[in-house]
Image (cartoon, rainbow, N blue to C red; front, side, top):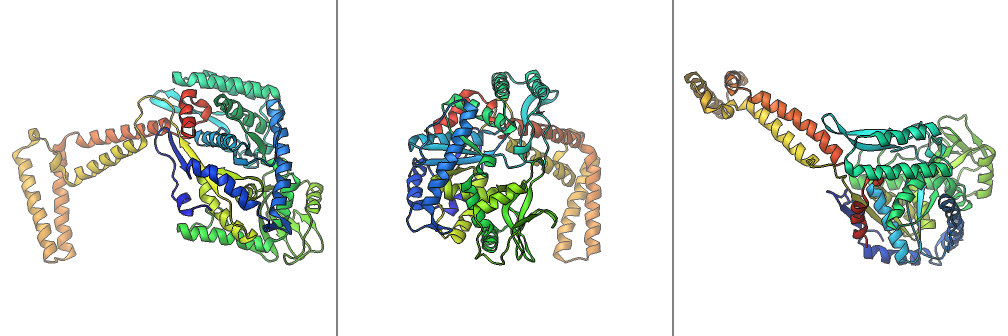
Length: 542
């Protein structure tokens, strides 16, 4: 079983080359076998069928799909055996950073050690994230960041529907990269990115294929390999449709278990925001939202909502926000076959896609022997654990978490924390200057007049203490305070340019903070790193 206290304490690795790994590598290897034993137990049933049978059919079907898709990307065939240990991870289709690259390394390592298969679910059902390539460049005032955009990306359109860049857009993207004024250490990686993009573009396919192939080709230089399967393809499988139908036609139970799991998570974490980590499913008068998205080609995704107590099975687009599935029952006792649901969706040209939590529930329970999360996924999947326990009555299989922090070699750039500490100190000193100007008056500035002001200030401060002790009126205390403030203002004139110097230092430090944020950003595409740098991560997983 997972240890919730471990996953609730995970934070991003601090410092260059930092890796977080929970649990330890040996425990992950052992968990693969424990999960297989757990999930193959004879007494575990889902929708009247043994879980082991569900898993066998699912793995046979999806591994064949993954082998076919990856074979088209790589131009080769794969021999797959569904009975081998299956290690799975997943991430959005984008320019992934080193925290994701280390998931590929761990995925490949566990697959190799267990003599199994490594599978990456390409979450192309999500809206675009990081489809621009952020590159640190030399600016007029030091480091700057250039965002190079890959074609005309529509912000709210799922990745699976995004258009492939035109030949002119691709040429412009590569041309911009090649013209960037970058540190010498980035020139080689940028050249490799350009070559791999050009080769991938020549091989055809869509934007998802282009991005997936790019990640694969750059990672392959580290002798790692895995299968890729887009969620859009997975969602059209009979296995996924069976999983979805089992949930969709138990809307009340799903709604209850899903929202209860989220509520328990928020209470444990003392979270008051009801949209975090994700919103509750909505239930109204004979209407229940499901944990799935409804897609229509070329359009934004919409909630998939069940409307109960209808005359028959149908789809309704006119009932408000979302796509509504009308079902002919008011409780969870009547079932509709996955084939009927699939046929209805095809008829109305509607595609069904899992939400984030639903995807990992499916992957962990019906597909994987071991699932690898990043930090966010590991944290939020405690909600999935709770759902699995209460909806399926199954002990949730263990999963792992890995992430890494890598910084590009951009010269001697102070850390963000160092610069923030400097800014905090300067702001404190500037405030102290106004309240205690005597501390900042140089001996060369001392005059009889200044000494007289200092004496009056000391007397006023002493009077302040006295007034407080005798509980003087607010009017008397305020009058004494105004006297001190007036004297301080006169003393400020003897501090020279100290205030202006501090203000200039703060402005300079804020510029340094911008530089530090650029220099120590952990989100840069892993393809921008030199091979030797990324080998540091590989050695930590061997």
